[in-house]
Image (tube, helix red, strand yellow):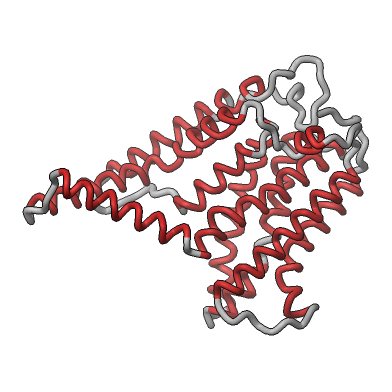
Length: 313
């Protein structure tokens, strides 16, 4: 998918990204504040209402981008590729970024391994059945756990709806706008996470109101969250610019939401810190090789692409 250089002005790109950010957050409160709908009867109803609002804001953002970006053709394949939605090189866009991201959780994996090891040792001490029937019981527990997660509305928010809508709006829409507006890739990687973090400011009010806590504590908690979103947003933007593939930041987003913050210290064993440091070193060493544009796109020579494959090599 090609774009005309300078086809979007800087002012239009910034205004559009700001409007998308405000709309993405504001629409969440529209059912009660604008349409005066009655409060949802349950938490599930509340979350489903938010899912619908997030979906509407995402579709609107995609349509607005389609009109602003200098797209030469309205064919579906061209539109999708402009947003980083491509079928070719999909396995690379899933496996390689996911493997890279998992290195940051090496300490967490070490901690989990020691936890499982201790659990198995305890079972042996208590004469637990570790035969085929015992393994079958563990397998059935894993299935039940999976089913409980699938039926959990909060899990759908954390692992499906939030990552998908946020990546479509803050990566698929905003990054092409900023690049076509003339911003350099490094600037885009640092600028787009600002919009991403601002979209989480509403958590300050919600945390302050729902937790009945002090404003200072609410600011500290949300401030930490905003710092984390800026760091992750920069990384997700880096993946999107380097690969031009939505799957890359999307699977990383889902994985990070599932894992939480990386474990870098444990009082039980120092191996967690060793694993964390080793993972960070591996992450830094492989960051550019595993995100090399030629792994994700066949056309990187003498072409003008949406995500600057030629300039970002």
